[in-house]
Amino acid sequence: MEMRTFRKWCRTFHRELGFLAVGLTLVYAVSGIAVNHAHHWDANYERTLERYSIEPPGTGPTAEIGPVIMERLAITAPVKSTWRAGEAEFQIFLEGGGIDVNLVTGEVVRHGFAKRPLLFDLNFMHLNSGKAPWTGIADVYGGMLIVMALTGIFLVRGRKGLTGRGGVLMALGFLLPIVFAVVSRGGG
Image (cartoon, rainbow, N blue to C red; front, side, top):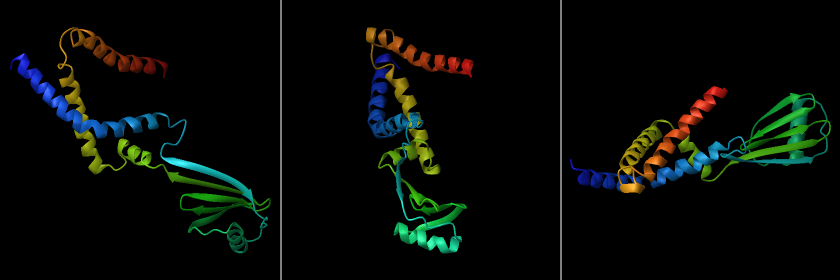
């Protein structure tokens, strides 16, 4: 196959797969940035914490103080379960959070969490939490990226292409992960 025909095929594959890959690329790019900063914030859930007090219910038997606590907290959401965590600690588990009550002081700590709209779903796909169906989609997408990378290097000719600036940038693209792997392996 002559180079001109080869480049034409590269351009066609690169263009068509590129348009097909835009949505998936945005899923992985946005989620990737969020997941990379998991040590700074929870990208999947928005967490809340609220502190207040109620009249202390005392440390009597759990069967007696449980209903008193529920009444004083005016809980309307369905209760998943309760737990007497200690002599002075009562916990209530709700959908999307929970409540800790100090039975002696009446201090209440209400903590909750809710899925972050859109970002939860992007992370779900990126981390392949859905398994079976998404694994196939992700594998096809990975294959598309390989084809796009390999066809893309032949699209530009001359000093901006593979034999010029493009080749230097491509070499840097290979060098970055290699250097990181060597450095991180040496330090750990």
